[in-house]
Length: 469
Image (cartoon, rainbow, N blue to C red; front, side, top):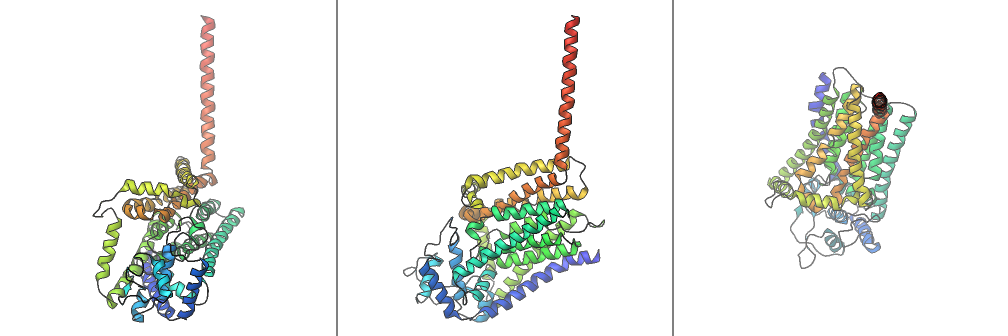
């Protein structure tokens, strides 16, 4: 019990601080690594069409949908002016006079920078995020092309999902924790098909974050072969939360990661009498949020050491602008309309398939949960069903809390709807794997037979009365 409490309280804080410390060292070492070669690779990407001036490439399965983030991250990776200590904490976004480069177009700014146009003297540090994707690109870009990096990102995400799914199938075939492996297999399969990987896995911004989600799913699949104690699950959730913040660019990683931790984070934990499943899941979720919060707060502390406290006001203003607290009001109807319009991002532009999958998963999950809760299923199975149902809450909460963000960015934020699909179908297959659906069908058939016999008896009595009359 003592180790359990210690892991829950102290572990996430230490992990969050350590992850940012490692990031800061990696960021400092990434600076000044053959910048001319990196710039040449960017110029070649523009010549070959791997980078384009138009930052909006919605639906592109070749160079990826998010050229805006790709250009922004590339721009920050090669613009290394200023004090190296300050740049290691937060990257710079090059600015140009509006008469030279169109405002709010990072692709135009990137093209101007590599063409030799001198940016203005003001150094704008992008302090809102930790920018793990930018640091990673600083290591790769001097030695490899944009096309090669995108291909590696896509292969990394695909490879992790393939290995994770294969691990689950082998577990099912061996009869080891069949129900748990089935639920996890559904989640991996949904990420592979209904997470818009066709248009985002190659993105310089989304690729590393997507690989992190796939890696966490693979970790859980491997842990199912040798179930561990709750401390391992809690610390794993803390590492997952901290790394999510490192690679997060307000693109849905936090609610999606939180949902995965609630629904699956304790799936490979050995059952112990003094550790209830709900308590373990709550501890894992707290570790995910706690470690991520510590990483982010340490980042803000580092910014304030090298700069000032203005970053706090900037972050608050941005969050308020996108949230229900916006001075312009929160238009939930407009957000819902945008989500419905762009739901095709889940399935390569196929809006009907994406919408039908979300609705179908909700129906299937409701039916599966009803079968489990109405049956004499084991307590662990009932807990897993409830946790899967609850795990959708972070997605719903995010949709309600940041409607203005969704109105503008639904074309990539819709991807968080992949989790309701995973949780819904996971609930259904959990009910199937544990026999709850079979028992419900059997009871329904027995009820139908009893009803038929009653009808038959009533009909026979009626005929007998008619004959007597």
